[in-house]
Structure formats: structure tokens, C-alpha cells
Image (cartoon, rainbow, N blue to C red; front, top):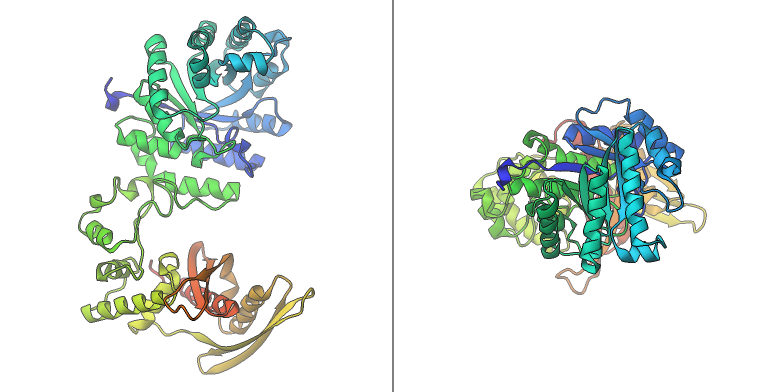
Amino acid sequence: MTNSAKRCQLYDTTLRDGAQGEGVNFSLDDKLKIAKALADLGIDFIEAGYASSSPEDMEVFKRLTTTSLGNAQIVAFGSTRKKSNSAENDSGLKAILETGAKTATIFGKSSKLHVSEVLKTTPDKNLEMIHDSISFLKSKDLRVIFDAEHFFDGYAEDSMFAVKVLDAAKDAGASMLVLCDTNGGSFPKHIEKVTGDIVGRFGDIVGIHAHNDTECAVANSIAAVTAGAVHIQGTMNGYGERIGNANLISVIVGLYKLGFSTINEKKMSQLTSLSKYIARVVNEPNNPRLPYVGERAFTHKAGTHIDAILKTPQAYEHIRPELVGNARRTLTSKHSGKAAILNKMKEFKLDVTEDQLESLTNMVKDLERHGFEFENSDASLYLRMVEHIGKYSPPFTVHNYVATDNSNKYQSVGMEVQIGQEIVLTTAESRKGLVDAIRKALDHALASKFPDVSKITLEDFRVMDLDTERSTEARVGVWIRSRCDNVTFWTIGISSNMLRASLDAIEDSKKYGLLVLAGKIRI
């Protein structure tokens, strides 16, 4: 089979299987927005939820089945009928019909262990339940996808029974037979061998649903496709129960690299923004180490690597970051040479002379010997660089501060800030802690001269003890993530005193944010 001619269906279950992950919750509005984003990306099937789980899910189906989603099919998920019910009287199957969805996915047991120990029934009865459920939904003009739950484990236990399960589903009218690695314990070689056997028997109606318990879900999904599977189920960012499901984003790009067709190539540039958007909806930090779309996916630190990619990006990048909507980053550290510093200046859109480049390189190395880690604090690095080459004068400076901890009541800070030629004395208190009091005091001091300073908001705060080259002086690092006008940036403060380090990081945050507000940041 020629890879380039093969089209693979994408089936997203973020709204159902993904929502079963710990800490993942979607509101009705979240589900509607995510479904629209998935449809725009080009996902073929969007599983909107478990048909009989809640009234909210039923409302989701009601809204989605009357919403224009292009070619995407909304799918209702459910199980085979209960062993004591007929298909016509089964509440779960009735709920599927009530969703209004034209496609249903039914899961059934393909492992004898589950049949006997979980369902507490016989193999023959299990086959009847599968056949009856699919036949009933087909009689109501629904397309039915069959998820063969625990298939790879079941195939290892009793391959003849596992195949009989698929036979029953196909005979009843299932349009797709999905092999599920439900426990997530399989490896690519086993997945490829078994999937190849099943494709040889059933042809181009075989799919894969992989969980990530061995961190092989993406590899297993791709192995199944190379063995002949034409339908891949997964979730965005790999959300899901336990460790999660196959990350469809990585599957999409992996299959693209192998010459398989999934979404339109022009749509692939949406992958990074979609990954970040869904992470925000889930309310968890976007994983910077995600392949392709993570912040660190195209980040280079070693001097030799940076020198090489400046000459030819293919030296250390297996795809173009622009393909998936991501961007190349280079990190500046004591391990970096002039090539890395020069590239960072290009990222900052700053022109420097050879002498300035040499001086900047020495400055960065010296600062990092004392604990500064600019690789994760570009805003502070930018401020140091532009000031060092004479292209920036700080609009204010904090000279002195006094902090008072009033135990259970509140914490207060007094501060002396120089703004131009003016000295401003200010105080602030907070019940959230001294760091928040420092932020408020600085905002108060700057407000008269810079009324929009409150738009520079603190989003994250991290503290770490540092092992610097000054072994006789214990130092602490404080990293702060801030946001201003939809620009997110990190600053750093280093000191033997945690509050001083916090103040320095906050001070950099306000300085950089003021440049953003003034439209002077071109990064």
C-alpha cells in the first residue's frame, strides 16, 4: 500500500475520554468552543460525550447537532446493551438515539477475562449483546463504530474469541472496527503484528484506540496505521484517564512525516495554538515538552547546536517549526558562545557591532556564573542587553524597601522609588504575603507617572535555591511570569535574600511591561 495515497480518519475523544483525566473538566461552553475548533482543524469525528451520563451532555449534543461544523461528524458514545435487557428497551441505547447524533460509537468486551469477571456473563451472550446493540442502532439509520475494548489483551488471551467479537460487530453492520489498547500496556511491535493480522482478515475498516500507560500511545497508533489501520482515535494534548490517550497532535504530525494524509497541510499551522487553547480551557499549564507544539520543541541551548541551525536548520530540526505554528528559540547561558548571543539579538531585533557582541557575551557569562538563568527569562535578558549597549535607560529604580510581617493579619512594605529626578515614597499591605505587598507598593509608586501599570499582571511565581560558583554565599532565584496586552514573559531576580530577588524580578516585569504598553517591544 502506498503511504502517500492513504487517507486516515481522525477521531477526537477529548470531550469524553479526555474529560475522564484527573483535573479535566469542561463546561457546556467549553465543549462547544472546542468542538468548533476541532471541526475547523479538519477532525473527521468529534465524540461529544457519553450519551447517558448527564443532562449537560445531552444539551451539548442538542447544540452541536444543530451547529454547522463542516464535514465533522458528531458522535455519541455508549456501551452495548445490558445483559438482562433487549436492545429496544436498553436505556443506554435509547439515550444515544435521543442525542440526535447520526454516528454512534459502541464499546464491547473482546477479552474473555472481562466477559467472565466484569460482565459476569458467557462469551456467547457477550457476542449477542454486541450484535443486538449494533443491529438496533443500524435499524435507526445510524452509522456505528465499534470499539473492541481490551482487544490486544483479549487477543493475547484467546485470539479466536477476540476475532469472533469483531465478526459479530461487522455482521451487525459496524462501519469501523476499532482495536483498543484499553490498559495501555502494549508495545508497537505487538500492536503492528496484531493489527496487520486483523487488517488481513477484515480489510480497510480497522482503527486504533491507544492509551499511554507505557508512553507508547502515539507510537502504537502510528504502528497500527503502518500495519493497515485507517482510523485513529485520540485526544488533544493526550488528555485522558490515568496517564492519558494518544496525543492526536503528535499522531497527525507523525503520520504527515510518513506520507499519510489526515488534515489539510495548511491547517497544521493551527496545531500549536490549538494545543495551548485547550490547555487554557483545562486550566493547566501547557506542557513545554510536548513534541512539535511545546515551547521547548524547537529550543536550542548548546553553542554547537545553535551555530549549526543558524547555518542550516535541518541540522537539529527534523521538521520546520512553522509547519505546526511553533517557533524556534535559542537560549542564552554560560554555555553559549557569540553565535548564540548574536542569534538572541536577532530574535530581539537588535543590531550590534562586533565589539558589542563580545562585551554582551562576557556580560551574560558573568551574570550566569552568579546564578542568573536567562534561558527561561527572556524579558530580563532583553533589559540587560539593551541597557548594556546604551539603547535603554530604566524609567525608574527601587532604592530601598522595608518589609513587615504582621503574622496572621497582613504583610506590609514601604518602598523608595526614583522616577526620573523624583523620589516617591510608597507603602502597601497585603493579606496574600510580602511578595504581593511588594507588587502593590511598586504599582502605587508608578501609578501617577504610568497609569496603565496595573495592566501588567503577575501570573506565576517560582523560587529555587541556586548552586552558584560563589559557594560561600547561598543565593535564591525567583522567576515571575507576567502578562501584558496578551504578551506573556518571564523575568528573574537573584539575591541572597528571597524578598530582594522577588523585588528585582517584579521590577523587571514592570519595566518590560511598560515597554510592551509603549509599543517598543518588537520580539
